Image (cartoon, rainbow, N blue to C red; front, side):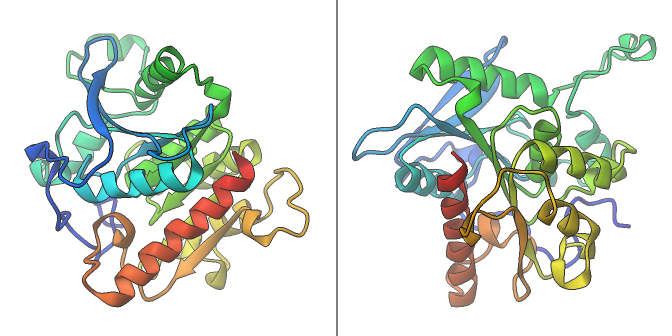
Length: 289
């Protein structure tokens, strides 16, 4: 198995303006820093027409962090769902391209929870647990917009789907959508069990995953994928006759991993399938939020 979170032949670095330029050209939201050390940067987008509800969506990025394509996605979700959207830069401005030689170790410095074992106490290396960043986000939403954590959903991209799954395993979010998932990080980096965390997450929150053609077969209903089956059979609330609300994995067989947040949308099919995936997520979140 490759040591990258992305499969071979995936979309690489974003084609659009990078996070490093801090460019918000064309974006409707704003950047701010939160957390105990004020080092967790976040993009915040709210609907410009009609006002936001007392609900929010937390976005967990891929390994390229905040960038202008992601800003546009956040703006769309905020407008379509009439809620506050916050995207977290859990990597503190760093990206995969800065860690090509130590990529697995870099991901390991962003565990979901802090290791408080005796051996870890002697480790002075920087560690940024994702759970603590999510908790900082919850504090921000409550203090700034009076939004309770019980009214927050989550969306993840690539690495962010692993983080999203871990969060739902711990009942931190009410529902979840993910794009080109890299849940394999649980086993590849942290030695855990992908199926076990997916089972707990799917039983705690309804999940929709949009899966690329070169994503792992365990995510694909057409291949009898174990994770796809777990999500489809999850113990979530009855969706009635609303197929759009059903927890499931949806395949986009012509797409490469990364197409929603990093694909070249000047290619008509990429644009079409990116929009289709986002629209599926809006329908799903609208039901469960």
